[in-house]
Image (cartoon, rainbow, N blue to C red; front, side, top):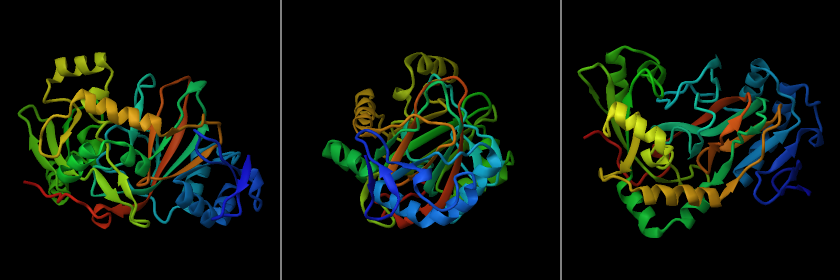
Length: 339
């Protein structure tokens, strides 16, 4: 049932198990076809809805190409970011406007907060569906404070005390290559970036790059101060992979050479049971709405995790990472320095 939000005059459709949906045609102002004007006119109201609910899906805006999508992203964002440390390659359409990460359509991208392993990450995520799949493929969302509250206290306290460790082994076959992650193949530039961003690095005899970075698992929202479960511990862990994928990667690259893996911040392995618990807790707190062509979704990246579900048929969703936030401004509990 459409209701008027206290923070905004726009009429939302609120249903249990779904993100809030705003029919663009009910918002008044410029017609949905005038994308840039509509976004500019409703920017403050949309931001208010995201602040209240953590995410909002705008339906019927009619986005259909990268140029129009880029105009909307620029109107809604204070600043669009250039992605660094990508875990999977993307196509860049314009500065700050990307394709979804290239990931096998039959494999889920489990709940995560974009670039939560970086020292500067998006405060806002923008998604635009130019072409919806025939089945699946939703960008689902999950409230990070609710997830934190639902997890066992002894587990979250350990992660809050130790943080989490991300290990990466870059190659040209699986995940993002060095050039795709850092924007260059120049070893000196890569090393300078790593030193400036508290990333331990080691070049292997075969020329591949291995990195380690310790990060916070729990942060405070930079505006509200709410405690949020903010990380990619489950998504980038070996136990989230399909068993046949994990077995193949271990066989090819070895247990210590996986493209990415996560551990407790002190270096101990994270058990399969813990990863299953994290993913189940996310699922219990998940809201999903199937994409329709032309949809726009705006997500608070600190308060709200997002995922990409497996799908069939062509799927084209563009992504904008916006309004950068520094980890230092989120009350970190773990010091992130190289050892």
